Image 1 (cartoon, rainbow, N blue to C red):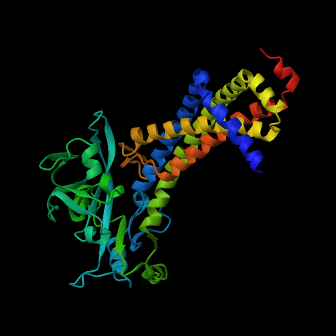
Image 2 (cartoon, one colour):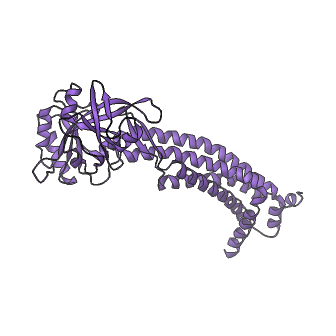
Image 3 (cartoon, rainbow, N blue to C red):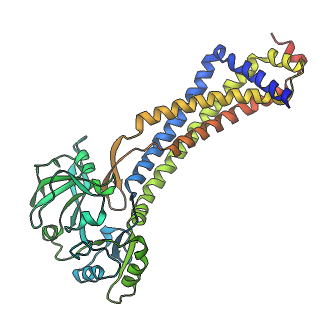
Length: 397
C-alpha cells in the first residue's frame, strides 16, 4: 500500500511540476472552467438575492389574511366587516393599550421613473394602518419621520428610494390627480417591503376610489403556536371567506416562479458552457499525455503500476480545474455579491429591489462543477496513458 501511494505521489508531483512547460494549454483549460463557474454563480446569485428579498427573518408570527382563492394581494378583496371579524379572532397579539396588532391594507401599483434609465416601472403603493410597523416588527424609520394619518404623506422603502427617482425626503410626488409628500425613508430588514411606498390606507382608498375596501390584513400573533387557533376561527366562521397564510410561506410562494426560472436558465447556460470547458480540458490533458509519452513509458518500464499513472493524470486535471474554479468563484463573488438592482415580481407585476447574493452554497456548487469537469476531462487521457504500450512509448521522440 505504501509503495502504491508513493508511486501516485511521485508521478503526480512530476506531472504538476511540468505544468509550466504546457502553460498555454493549461491556462486555456483553467480559464474555460473559470468562465463556467463565474457565469453559473453570477446567474444563480440573482435567484438567491431575489429569494432573500422575499424571505422573512425572525419569528414566524406574522400572518396574511386574504380572500379565499386569491393567490396574491392584487387578486384579493375584503370589506370592512371582513376586517372587523378578522381582528376579533383569537390569538392576535395586543399592545399595552389592548389594541390588536393588525393592519388592514390596500395595495396599488404606480408608475415611477428609474434612477438609472429614466424609464417608468411599476412600484407598489401600500395603504397601511398605524399599527403596520408594530405588526411586522422589523420595519423602522431611518430618515425623516412616519406619515401622519389623514394627510397625503408617504414613506418609502430604502430599495424604492435607491431605485426610483423623486423619492427623497422632502420631495413632492404627483401620482394621478394627487400630490404626495415624501416625509420619511424606512428599512425593512432587506425584505420585499423595502421596495414599497407606504401611506395611510384611509387616504389611499378615496384617492383610488376604493371606498372602504381592503385587500389584505396583516396580523401579528401572540406566538407562532397561535396560528392554528387563529386560522380555525377564520375558516369556520360562516360569515367569512378568507384564508390565513404565514407571511414567510406567502412570500416564498411569491418568489417561486421567478427564482425557478432564473435557476433553470442559469443551469442550462452553465451546462452548455461546461461542455465547451470539458472539451478544453480533454484537449489539454490529451496534449499533456502526448507530450510525456516517453516519460510515462519509462515509468511503466521501471515498475510503476497502471493505477498510479491514471490517478496522476486525473490529479493534474483536477488541480487545473480547482484553480479555474477558485478563480471563477472569486471573480463572481467580487463582481456580483451585493450588487443592487430591481426586477419584476410576476405575481404582482411590480418591481422588487434586491441585491445579488453569492452564498456559500453557490460557491460549493461551483467547486463541485469545476471538479466534475476536471475529473471527466482527465479520465479518458488518463486511460490512454495507462494503455500506452511500453515499447512504442519508448520509441517516441
